[in-house]
Length: 160
Image (cartoon, rainbow, N blue to C red; front, side, top):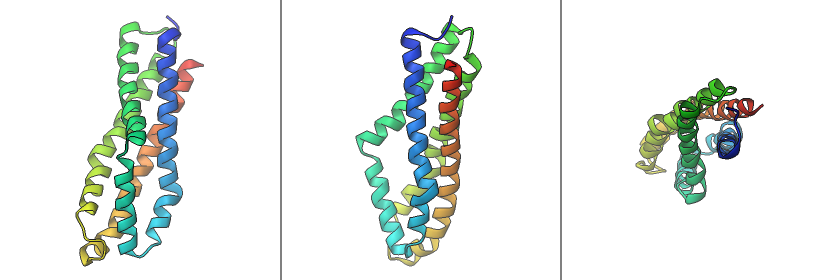
């Protein structure tokens, strides 16, 4: 079986979703976090907390969670129909997004966001934690960026 029909549409949507997520993460890795890190800790903490609250709105959550769901569906359909071409790329692309973008969000970035949200922006604990947060959060965001972009690329290669 070749990738066509509804399965083709799912893979295209998966590639588009992973690519858009990679773009969001890339923006944070390349300039947003640098800009926030340049602020005094109280301002950086307050700004990042506001960004984290804004990220929970439906537009980004649908994009991010929807892309993860699409990756699961693509992986399951790939196992069921086992296409002649692209099966390795589809399975790797799905695994890369789920383990390299969605997973680190849940176990690395979100816990750091929750800790940051619990701090008083002008407090001494926030001032001490802020540079640690920026370094660690940005590292994991780099991982999410590369994984999302890699997932999109693998999905595209599966269609080529």
